Image (cartoon, rainbow, N blue to C red):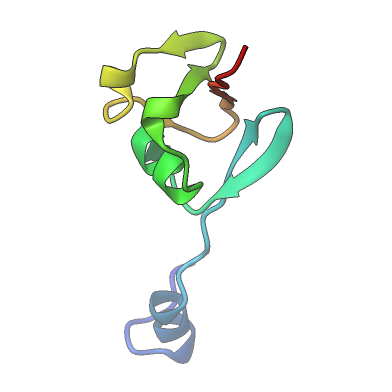
Length: 87
């Protein structure tokens, strides 16, 4: 049942919408996002330089040009691998 307009319960529901948690698996561990986001936004949030990593999304290697258009959703799996120089 929906509370009547102007009722305290309805006002509370509008002022405090339910929080959304998007849980993914990131490099083998659970990781919570506030909302679905692109790989580009995820890398920025993690402070990771996209030029220095390879990203696998749900067992598919993502081309760097697709980072901005590939969206990470709840229960997705993301692996981020850093390139390491040396010899």
